[in-house]
Length: 147
Image (cartoon, rainbow, N blue to C red; front, side):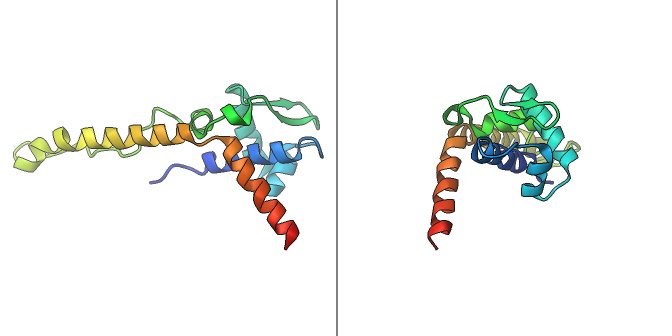
């Protein structure tokens, strides 16, 4: 079972806050309209992002604002804010047969590889910044305007 859409939705939220915060009040309803989801989902994610110190949300119709410089805001920061970062990516099966030659050794050979893959994912998430997506987003918006 894959992780939820919390990371992707949260990145969408942060990109929209960055893009719109000086143009309109970036409320949960406004963001929900962009994402095409329920404002309650957006409020829940904004709460997690706020608790992690990534955004500030002014009560009522005050809107949301980025607190962390997009250059220093990584996917790992966002992931940790909205997902259980201790959750393992690939859960090994628990009940191997100790009477089977493969069953006896499978964890000793498989678990280190699964841990390596998990660590590689974490390191990859640390290399992608919100600012790199902001640049891509602004380029795409400009390209659409030229078309």
